[in-house]
Length: 179
Image (cartoon, rainbow, N blue to C red; front, side):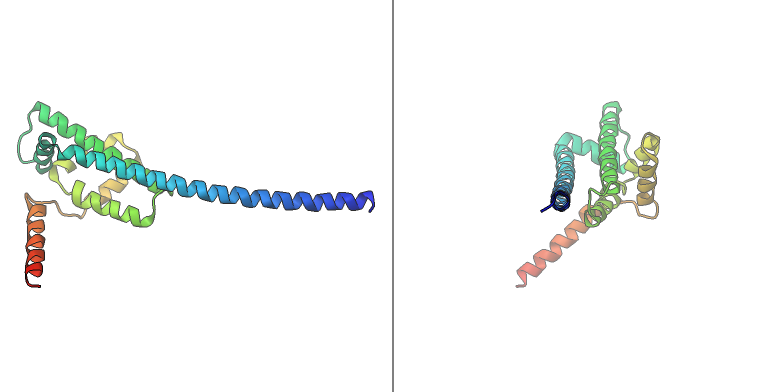
């Protein structure tokens, strides 16, 4: 073989090595993307688990329930607690919204998140009032998003979720006892 043949052969081997490296990098990027998405989903699950566990505390739960309805006057300490609880919820919602926009949350996960916001967070008059007080402190994309979750969706009336739950529980009990 001539020197030119060896040069051509080395270029072929080098090209194969580059292609192999690109394939390896592509596999690593895909695995890293999956890991990043899984981490984002787990962080959101942990965040909301912590938040709802905090609300399960009887004192904070009562303050939050009272503030959500917005019908009773909150004393200074209660208002401060409700304010902080709402801010924590809004910050978690904003983080989840940003993760979706960055492609870290699936469409399915995001649709469930939107429904949760509409039905369990933004459906309360006290939470909506708090949102009006603080929304100027959030990014424009998130403000537009949360405002859309509020507009056109009904407020919960006092006890409406509990009443619906009770109806569903009675229906399930009647199905169980008739079988």
